[in-house]
Image 1 (cartoon, rainbow, N blue to C red):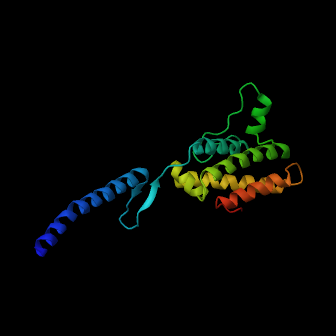
Image 2 (spheres, rainbow, N blue to C red; image 1 turned 90 degrees about the vertical axis):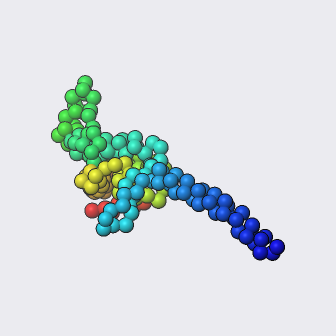
Length: 184
């Protein structure tokens, strides 16, 4: 009788094991739908697509637009360049000819700081490079975005005390550090 109870007990654990295996399988499927993995032949799995915090895409676009102002309105990191209003010829020339003054730089960098602060708060612990990768940018676009940010920081630092406030320049440098972006 003792042997028959043991066999019966063993049989009743089989459905429990099958149920646990099903739960684990469903959890793995859910995880892989959240983060898609690209398994390369010679590489360990790496994340190629993952979700960014809501609103990050718009903040990146606004950041690129403001970076673009100091680059003659050029596209930055695959984002559209800044296009001044058609009815403001003076502003249009200022952007196109890169004829901005330190106060313009101060104002634009303050906006960039605002956008970067929000990006940092929404995507805690992620570097700017990872955020841009998750946004779907390729290597050249990522380099364009980051190098333009470095150029902007160098310009702001060079104009510090001559129209660009120390606080504005230092804030940009600090935000870059949080995002894992070194200065030139």
